[in-house]
Image (cartoon, rainbow, N blue to C red; front, side, top):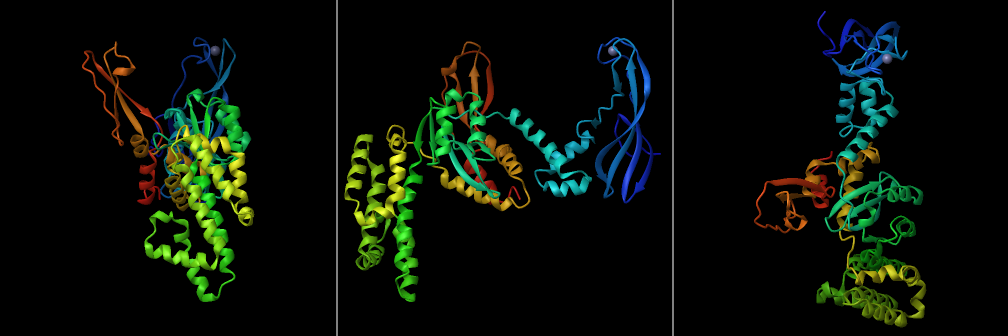
Length: 450
Ligand SMILES: [Zn+2]
């Protein structure tokens, strides 16, 4: 018969079709000469055992290989073993080419669909994928960020922790949960965790607890967009409340004014300002809340921490008692996170990519139908183009060159290039910071991951 399997270490003996699936009976082609354990012992036959392995689908049928494995026993060390068949993956009871097939397809198809194609358990597909993701993770190790951002994003139905490199605009990692236990376990063994100097975060107490415990040297700064957003939320709630007291026609109008209220006043046209001013005449409290919102945003325009803190105190002092309940959530957050909020003036970093990261989440949820979070994570983190755009090529000249003589060329971002004429061969290596967020966004928008 022709070699149905085309595998060098397996010899097919016969083929049958059972319930529309191929069953190929086969045996190993290789005969071991000496014991692989002790290297010298002579091997004796020790019976046979039938084992079943899944293989890649052929002619639209699933394939299973029934292998008559030969067993051997070493005369010297008395170990028993099966004949060597490199084409088989004994951990997953599949051919190595099926493992490869699953690894390739799991980025494009759901586990359930692959499981059907190859007639395997969905759980096994997941395990094979997990092994692969671990392998990719150790192959592409990203440099631990100096300025780290941590955000929460709802992806595939649950809140996940998104960890970014604020300086490099890259995704450093995505974690399946944002629970304290999971994040502590992760950050406590983070390689080079001492090199994290700053962490920008939203006001999620678990993140602060985890950082204080796992990265005690790192300073925390509240992402200013997160706290500023709370002032806009106050305004939104009030607008909705006042809308209820209006006639139908007026209601529609106040709905249209929503974005005018949320925008910074200085960005509004004179016509828009007169429109919102009319509402403020009708609802003076809304006007006062709007002015408080503007003053709150302006706190971040201060140049120093002291002046910002003074501005905030002045803001608190002018807060109308009637409006205190509306601003309660905001003022409580400011109290609980005071140090971290004003740390911004010591190092003005933000999760400036929060907006793009939110777009990322939207894109991921679009592709998310049927994909697990782990697959989405791996596809984002290890995307070749995005990783390349987020990496830096470092060239070193000569064996005597020290770090100062390295010349850095950013692939995408065109970082500074430093050169110094020095003799000696130039060696290049790539430093990876993780996938570049703007590239990921572009790829998601272009349907690259669909
Ligand atoms: Zn032996």
